Image (cartoon, rainbow, N blue to C red; front, side, top):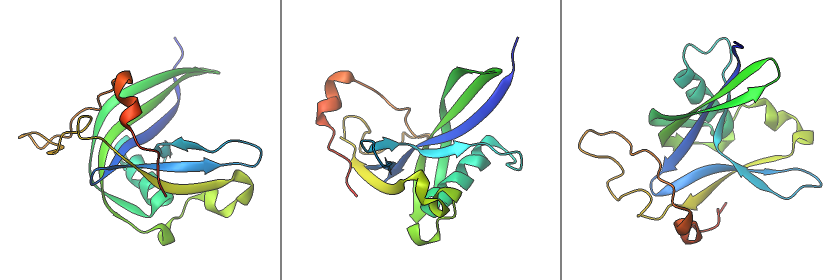
Length: 152
């Protein structure tokens, strides 16, 4: 059996009623959007600690809280990759303090923080039950037309 060769920590990241994403732009390609997060590094004490580091690097952000809600596995050369998906709330963000190496390398393209309005039927107004837990993400292909385009 092959082992885990790569781990990522990613966030379904909410700020109020908005989903925070990274808009990627690269020369010769159409823009695309990705969730906040990235690779778990050896110096990260935990996978959640890696998420906190990535949020700071990419957004100059601090999380209010985060909860693991899903795992995705991918077959990679030499083993398996695991993406740890967290539902998280953004406490603060200061783009001027971003520290990720991608911002020092213009050849890697643009990395812009954008927000998308999340319809109330996807995330209820309370956003958390009596337990204080974030609800797991719910997907309904029929409702995708109700999403607004991400905005800068």
